[in-house]
Image 1: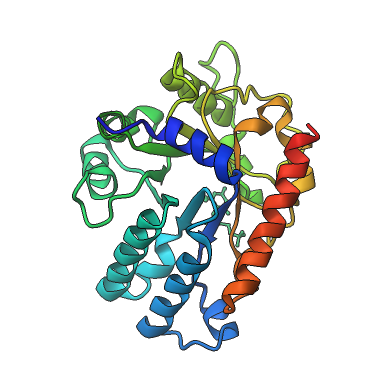
Image 2: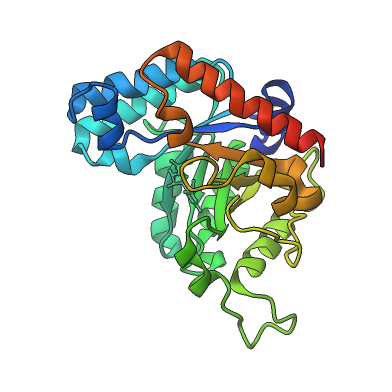
Length: 282
Ligand SMILES: O=C(O)c1cc(=O)[nH]c(=O)n1[C@@H]1O[C@H](COP(=O)(O)O)[C@@H](O)[C@H]1O
């Protein structure tokens, strides 16, 4: 049986530091790198990021949208990037933010979490906004295959609050929707060591989150550092004691230093060092 994602991730975070770098081939970045906004440019961009970083960061997170933009040939590049990144030792979190009714969710889960699928990844980002229970087929398959999920709980974007801060009158604890997702994840991960495989996405941009119980015994994927304005130094203030299970994501903040491999590595190393110092100070 495959070692569960939570324990593979814990080990990678301990060995390499917790940084997750996104592979987000924005058209503007392709242009900045002197590449065409076409399939050859996409391929060169992704291969460069993988070559630069897959042997040193804990996690690479390809953003599927930027590959889907090129249709089937873009997906082929995505498949190759996932395979090469995993072969070079990085864990791959596929950022596809899937969410649908349970029977369709089962097909999404099979696309990304079924061994042997062309897009098989270590973990997948999913949206629980058709109801947390609609994710069950993905939870079940992840458990079976030693894969992980990152469930959108409190997203980094300013628009997220109208959904995630809404309070359900029938919830006797009067938790908001985001807190309810965190509570579901804590249940999923109960009793797992060193931590469970069911993570939450919680933006690093959100300020003090001490009113939330972030102790879900699972990883907290924290996007928002760099281009969205958060910094590694913000992490202890946002996450408190849970900072030790945070996987901070930086995409454009690192990628803008390409296309030179050495500059990408230097930027990633600098973020990694700033994150290490911030976590150690917590
Ligand atoms: O799930 C995500 O990764 C995610 C969740 C969230 O709340 N906010 C967020 O920015 N993301 C993703 O994280 C990446 C952030 O990119 P940068 O802003 O360039 O660092 C993008 O790929 C987003 O799609």
